[in-house]
Figure 1 (cartoon, one colour):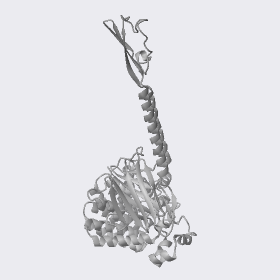
Figure 2 (figure 1 turned 90 degrees about the vertical axis):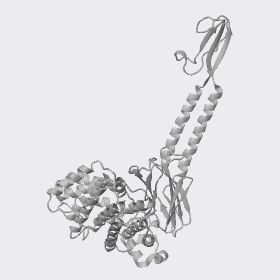
Figure 3 (figure 1 turned 45 degrees about the vertical axis):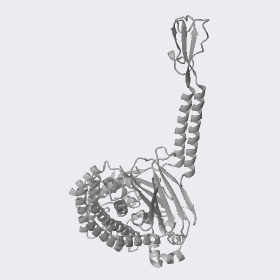
Figure 4 (figure 1 turned 180 degrees about the horizontal axis):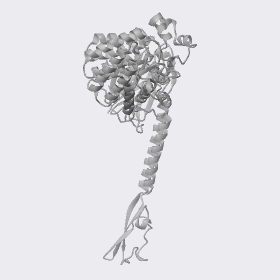
Length: 549
């Protein structure tokens, strides 16, 4: 899931991907907290560092590594370190353990709904002091990550008031408040003020004798992107380098956290036209991520800083793009596994749905798990939305329902088709509604409607001894044409529904040398920019699409 630590590769992607536009404040915020994806356990990182890429490919398989950690506590990934450098202030002055620790842990692995529920539940029994501040910040962040912005200004105001009258609040916790306030200010459209508040947050973190390095790096990333977004590239790069140094000390030079930071720097260097540094940093980041073999490992909950994302970034050596017939297809390759994706907003088989066309080819050394969790579509413009994936069967049933309804009405109105029949009768007529008996037989009324609702319109006109009768009679040819059109609609509907059912891409295991392709459907279809994330094993392949309309 997206957190402070891995928000900014997306932002850097935007900057280089499309220099004519930049992320909106809301886009920046939403993208920082909806990432879902894989982790690499510490043992795996150590194994990579020990054996190296070539040795691991020859001597160690993903299964071997899994067996090595199988005896470890499966909940270990949910635990926050309470040692030096990890004191976020949320466990100060609490009773029965850290009041916001469980909620913060849930945020750290991307379970934002659970984090919100935990924080809200604890706030029923906690009032005042550092404990309430920590809980409210956790509540704010869990709601922000879900895009629930409405109540946040009030919550932030409450936290600010608590901070002003509470003693013993750590600089770490105060910095966290200012960072959240900076994000909210950016969401509201004031990037200048957001930058100043972000600088205040950094100042508070650096006041602490044991700053939370993870949160500090997130705050530095936020400030660096605000600077990059306004064109202050040199200062932004200085902050990115500072983050890389901190991440190296905290996680190691060959960590995924450092690889993510190298990508940010590479994207900015590419934007600046510095091809040498851009390619060097891209290559190093890709090497680190490929060493993890995350593509071949089964998915498991993980810390955000360990998540392996292979992103479509401008200038990266493992990506390519082609456009044909108005459709842009993007391609990402990692560990010899290639994922291709295109995003369509309009096609014959859609009912108000976006469709992602995906093809996955396994050229690696082991089988892979395709879609071990749901694929995310995050709409960026014109508004930030986490699109809901629509199951193929549900969409197929919707197509059938609407198509059958349309065919039914075509048949109904077609069955009422009539033609006008005119009859001239010589004689004096009778001046009444029907001619006198003996003047000729007139057929009964036909059709839908007519005088007093009894049938087709039936009228006459008597001129100079001739009576003209006009009546509506069934148009059997028109009715047959309507039945044929209705049947054609039903047939087309059945084909479309069958195509959706058959083409839907679902969870599967893909053997070495094989390919699979299919479609994913989402409930949004009117947007200009979006990010599509395709989980493969423990990794996530991330695509960025612009100018869709």
